[in-house]
Every structure is written in C-alpha cells, then in structure tokens.
Image (cartoon, rainbow, N blue to C red; front, top):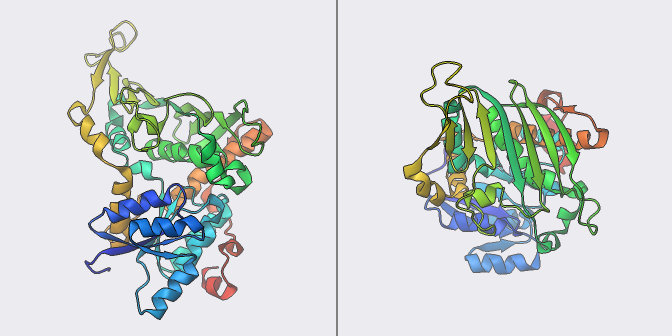
Length: 392
C-alpha cells in the first residue's frame, strides 16, 4: 500500500490532451505532478508553465530518479500518439509504475494483450482512459436505465466538424495506419460507453460516410453502423468528424472546453424500451406512467415527458469526468479500487473497431472477436527478451 502522502504522477506526452491531464493532477489535493515527459521542444515550456520537471524520455526520467535517490512516480498518464501507447506503457510498467493509458489502449489487439499480461506480471495496475464512464450524465443514464423497462434498441450520434489545425498539430491523425481516423480516435469512446451501458457487442455492420478531405486520403471521416449486442439489443450509430452538427457527446455534456456547450441539446443517445424511452444527455424519460394494459401502453394513450434528475442537472454539468477519473486512478494506485475500465474493456472496444474496419472492407456484417482468442505479441512491447521472459 502507498503511504498517505501525495501520489506522484508523471504525464507522458504534451500534445493536445497531456497538458489538460497535467492541470487536473495539479488541482488534485491527493496528487503531485512529478514531471512532463515529451521530446518535443514545446514540452519544456509547458512543463515550466506548470511548475514541474521536464524530461525528453522515460529513460532520462528514471536516470534522474536513480541519480538523486528519488522514488519513481507512483503512476503515469500516457497521452502519446495511439500507435506508441504499448511501448511507452511497457517501459513504464517495467519500473513498476501504474498506468492510466489514454484510449485506445493500442491500435492492435495483440499488442494490448501482451501489455495486459506483462503489467500483471509486474503487479502494475492498468486503467484505460475511457473517461466518459465517469461522466455524471452517463452515471445517471446507467442508474436510470431500468425505467424504460426492457431495453430493445438504441440510437446514437457523434457528429461534428474538426478544424484543420487539429490534424496539423498531430500529423499521425491523418492516417488510419498510425491510429488516425475518427473511427479509432472518437468512435472507440462511444463503443466503450455502449458496451458499458448495454453489454458486449456481438456483431457490427458499417458503411463509410462520403469523404470530403481530399488532402487526407488515408484517414476515414466516419461511418454509419448497425449494431447487435449479445443480449439481443440492436441499434444504429452515426459517427462523423466532418459535418456541421451539435449532436455529439462534447456539445451535449460540456466536458470539453474546446467544443462549445449546447445546454439545450437532446438525444445524442436514445434508449428505446418496452416501457419508455430515455434521452441522453437531457435525461428526459418518455413514458406512460398510468399504463396498466396493452391499450394504455400503446399509441392509443398519451406519452408524457418527465425530466429526471431535474434538481441536479446543474450539479452534473459542474462535475468534471477527468477529475473523477483521476480520483479513481489514485484509488487504484492505493489499492482501494480495481480499474473501472480494464485492459479487457479497452481491448473489447478495440476489437469492435476492428470489426467495423473489417465490415467496411468486406461489405458484410462482422462478428466481434473474443478476447480469449487474441494471442499476445510480446515483441511489440519493445523490451529485451529477458524482461518479458516470465510473462510468456
């Protein structure tokens, strides 16, 4: 168990999301920002502005600790490009540093499976950064699902238009092969939430949306999906990062300061049930409260619109998911909790995206691969064979 002193956390990667994580660490009364680690020339200035140490690599951070008799950080938040997550995480895990890995855990399931096994061997906890599980609107939606009766179908949308600067800032986002494309960067968030709310996805059919960015031929711009869950629930989902739309998680919840908040937005998720329909994030329940038979629970009877958690909507908007996720990560490091989003959860979302990609290529529905069938690729960890020998 870790002592009651501040939990020291390093942030690896100082691109778009890294500094945001770092600021949340600084504002947490139970955590200390140990360092920013990033080879970029601008990262040093970011570290200076945050009043913390700066290192160009994990190797240099470890060497600094060894030379000065310092303990290694208790945890690290990995915010590097998607295709680097596994090697960066494995290097940190080799020193016993607990991990909060930004989604997706990896671009390749076999790599993620290797990291899962290696981290377990090193007694390192891995929390996958699907932070929306901590969003108060999702917490309330999950808590109120029973009010629709048996869930029959779902409908969801994540649609907006990203600026050109988003891609210029991080060129890896311009190619699916390096983890770019909206399906891997953004759809993976919603896939994780759908499975968190409704259980494992069994089968997916996907059609790519019409492409508009001629300067980025290797990055998808989204897809229309038909989804079937193992429990029989079915649904549709549209994902796009190149249309003008407020129907997306960020606009509806206000959790991302770079995306303007639409405080009257209704229904980026709609949950259709035998006794009612729940609209998220507005938390409206459409139902027939006086229904007692097949006639009153039908189109013959008026449907009422009930505002759930009406007295707490303002409070929900004020709670920041990144803060709640960080609090959870600290509890995980201290041994007070198990990761809410595990390596298996991260791999499951990734395998769903893999099914999406295969469906796009084949033109037919694809079953989602079982995690148990994934064989770990230990070479992807980037460590010497002796380091990973006991894991195999």
